[in-house]
Amino acid sequence: MIEFIAQNMAPIMFASLIIFLLIGYPVAFSLAANGLLFFFIGVLLSPYSGGSINLAWPLLHALPDNFYGTRVMSNDTLLAIPFFTFMGIVLERSGMAEDLLDTVGQLFGPIRGGLAYAVIFVGALLAATTGVVAASVIAMGLISLPIMLRYGYDRRLASGVIAASGTLAQIIPPSLVLIVLADQLGRSVGDMYAGALIPGLVLTGIYMLYILIMSIIRPHSMPALPIEARTLGHGVISLIVALLVAVAVSYGAYRYLVPAHGDNADILGATVGVIAIYVVAVADQQLGINMMSKLAQQVVIVLIPPLALIFLVLGTIFLGIATPTEGGAMGSVGALIMAAAKGRLSFDVIKQALASTTRLSSFVLFILIGARVFSLTFYGVNGHIWVEHLLTSLPGGETGFLIGVNILVFVLAFFLDFFELAFIIVPLLAPAADKLGIDLIWFGVLLGVNMQTSFMHPPFGFALFYLRSVAARVPYLDRITGKQVAPVTTGQIYWGAVPFVGIQVIMIGLTIAFPQMVMRYKGAAVEPSTIDLKLPEMPGLGTPPADNGAAPANGGAPAAPGTPDLSQPPNFGNAPPAKPAAPAPDLSKPPSFN
Image (cartoon, rainbow, N blue to C red):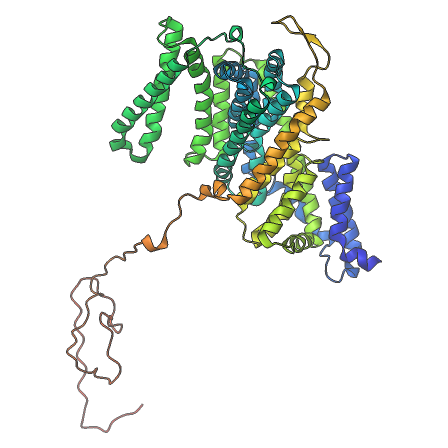
């Protein structure tokens, strides 16, 4: 019995961790306690393991290096987490979400499902600026849900749209989970961001396609905004004209700048066009010129600052100008500037942002420390080999491995959040994926899409909890219409999330079926046949000797054309030195053979 336990320590240790987590112990302490407990057991059972346990008391001396080395305390990659968290919380306090939802809701309002489209669009924008699910869901739940209920939206649909749009912050850069996945997979955060961008946008498009289909099948579940609710009036044509003018200015600036700036001229030209239309809109609003419609003014003024912040953060990372940590720092400064410009930057806002950032960063740090303790013991009992053999022996090869892993992560997401999955499960899966030849950036993005479901399904769907915390629990009087509005039940929130969980599962399949959505991060493929290698000319080495057809003096094979005389030092263009004349033999004496 002792031999059986010693030789199967790895699966027993993993099952024990799952039990600890299901009981409800904090993740960081469950990891650390499990690691230390089984380290003690493993040292005692090592003589009975037949060599499968490689643990000894001196191995504990490696823990301080694991904590203070490049994996935890000195990990530059993880510095991006507090920066992006701080940026997202400041932006949420600055009122950007309210302005975006109000303006985009007015823009899409005249069509059926317009508010749902606006929530998805704003959710994608907030994901690209804040990267924090809680901030997105709470902001949209407070602002959009009462408006959607006021104008007759189905409660399930409204709840599902808001919760699902908030989870876009999981996959659209600068997502916090992508930073953690890149660190755990040993890959670049910039590559992870570049690989996740297209799948995130495709998922946003599928959400909108679902709304379009539902607006056709069930038109009464998402009516258009009534005319009296469109406070910004009409003016879409004015907005289109303003966008065309901005494009024309950008093209003119590009043509002017291309001789001096080359490949960067397109970005600089677009920047000039955006700044120009923004200055015109602000001047038109402040001076009352009324050259643009009120709707066009508001859309330009509200949308351009967050888009500029997205470029400041993601654009500099993708262009290689800044690292993710530097991009997060610039984004934090940009968020402070935007909050100050709106007059909402105060000591309380900074205090709340710093407190929330410290709390989340400490949470991540303690989980990572606990994971290092667990992995020290788990690797000492050859757990990584057990997991690798278990996963690589799945039927179906690479496809079977991907299907099995995604089913495992989907099931575990019912009980664990994305940080816990990233720190516990991903380090165990990565070696097996690498051994099968799977690109780890693609694998990380695939897991990131899958981990979105951890926010959307019970019993621990955090996006559903966030929405539940701000949705009405009792009937209330609407402040605009004066009518009594029924509350939103927990069941309606849960059932509303089900179709969007299905869409996320479909997105997992699309990512597996079309890997080029992610693999584009590598850039254009290079065709080997087009590579032209030219070696520099070496004077004095490339002149072939004259060949008169005479056999070599030594009777050997003739020298190949162009073969240098290796008996002499190389000549780099100077006249060859004269050979010293050989001394004449003294024929008056017998030959010497010494």
